[in-house]
Amino acid sequence: MGLAAAAVTMPSAYASTPSGTSAPILFDIRTYGAVGDGKTVDSPAINKAIEAAAAVGGGTVIVPSGTWVCFSIRLKSHVSIYLAQGATILAADSPLPGETTGYKGGTYDAAEPNTVWDAYQDYGHNHWHNSLFWGEGLDDLSITGPGLIHGKGLSHGRGRGHDVDIAPFVAEQPGVGNKAIALKNCRNVIFRDFSILKGGHFGLLLTGVDNLTIDNLTIDTDRDGMDIDCCKNVRVSNCSVNAPWDDAICPKSSYALGYAKPTENMTITNCIVTGSYVLGSVLDGTFKKYGSDAKIPRNGRIKCGTESNGGFKNITISNCVFEGCEGLALESSDGALCEDITISNLTMRDLVSAPLFFRLNARLRGPKESTQVGTLQRILVDNVTSYDCNARICSILSGIPDHAIQDVKLSNIYLHHKGGFHSEWLKVVPPELVDKYPDPSPFGPLPSQGLYLRHVRNLELGHVEVAASAPDPRPSFYLQDVHRADFIAVTAPPGQPAFTLNEVTDLRILISRAAPDTILATADNKTL
Image (cartoon, rainbow, N blue to C red):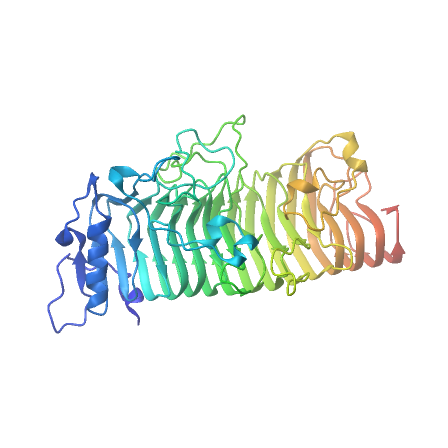
């Protein structure tokens, strides 16, 4: 067992282990000059403790109860950080625009030099060193314990409509920190039991990190909760993430390493994601929601993408709750092979849009000579319930002309929305958006109330029901350029056509309340 694993259980005392024993060696940061009064900058002392542990081959650095103001903390191989109950690592204020230093003359570590591939993803994805905690090229490390990481002094980047009390730090400005935790090219990493409040642009940015475990974190943040980019053998479990302005749990496969690497062999399970709670109210247990007039995007979802050069392979997403946010998204926009994915046991309530959004398109951010349209195939979805979704944008499975989503099975799904509609929605022809940012909102209002299916091959829906609180005359299933589709035991609101069919071939509808048994070789401009 590596030191990262060994440090998961907190030892009973903060004393160094006597020589000759096998227990982890402990390094109390107070021994190295840390004060913990919420005023003193303690990162130099914490870095000394980490360096001392690394110098003897590894150990556990203890952060006791107290408020420890910090700039950059540099992680090391074979060193575990334990955040004790009552411990808060408080991110010191970054330099404000026009200034060269932040709190008490300090700065975060400088970002790495820009590279030629920085153009393929935004600034935040391309830099790791300008963070509160960071590490590169490390192995066998962990951060555990019930303490808190508070990113008060971090930049949230260029997000939309943030709270007025969040300082306008500019991420690209020298000396500014913009991530709570960032790792690049590491292996054997554990994050467990701690919380993050206001994590900057990313609570966790983990790029090229293999053998990664993230368990029992609570993240209440102003941009992305966790971005897991180009990683292999990943387990995310038992986490709660409130991310009103961006995505909650976000696997990616960007070009930030300078080459395309997939995110693969990954499980996400037993997690709760939200996008409607006031920052801090999930952590303190008050669960205060933003008012209906608040200009909050309410993202807060699980999303694979948008950065998608390397692909997503062998992924499972199960036993998760979505509340007051967007739905689940799988996206291949930059050449990703997105395949062999199973999704099961999801419950969703009060969604902003699209309980399911599967998108294959051709944004193609990557080297022109090697970036081609990817795939989205072999996707299984089972046991999903969505209640009281916004009616404007239903679930979407959409490829682009000549590049279809393939081999998708949806079963045991209940899709309920608020209902009601504007008459013009029936006549909407959604744009193809071949090379645009992949997201439900650019599709605009849709001519379907349940599932909008375009450029899809080999589709099977079984035991799927569409329901609404208020009458909505749009069809439940809208098919455009769909080949070989089976609908078995599907249910739709009565008294209106359930299907609109355009450029459809090889269609079967069987034992369904939505429509009589039907077998069609071809169908165009047809309703059922």
